[in-house]
Image 1 (tube, helix red, strand yellow):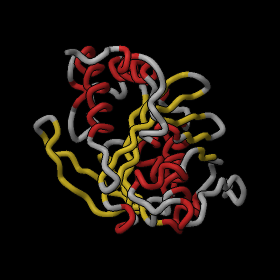
Image 2: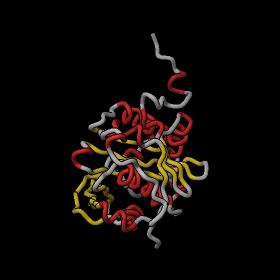
Image 3: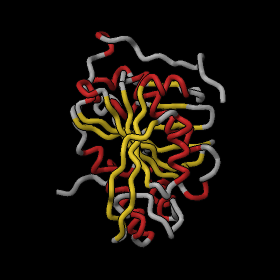
Image 4: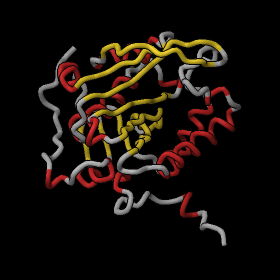
Length: 244
């Protein structure tokens, strides 16, 4: 007996069963959420069209080196695998980024034993046509707000190769500090990965993007955190922003 294909192709995810499907983050320009099938398809085509200069490779795993059709398929399969592997102890949240109605990229937030370590990790990619518009900063600011304000994280980690000034610039603007380097092998050559770390205090001192969160409370157990009734409710902090 084969699975009903319409269950994969149509309709929203069941928010009463998989509560992160009801999570929404908004900034002045952006809307971040788990993608519906149409948005996931748009993400796949966006990635197939290019997310970086082919002469460079910003990813440890060079998934964008594949032919366009394989890149598109990899985006869809990676998304399904990520959600399928979700546990409250070890999770990764792959959010579609929509700017003024257009799918422009993916912003991820992940953690292992968040309730114990208080640490999250971010990762992202942005369609090449949308580079240079400040979207990368705004979308990472959104998930940092979720992490620190919504989920009570204490620190956030990121990394970028030293030949990726755009990503390093985003981290610098948001208050990250260098956290050592790691030598990686990418395309058969050594690449220096600059690790970065953001404390809660540095995040608060560098916040310039207003972010609103919707649907956090019902998601907390899926993030390995106590229910909202036993912890302070997440707040929408559009005030006390720092101005550049």
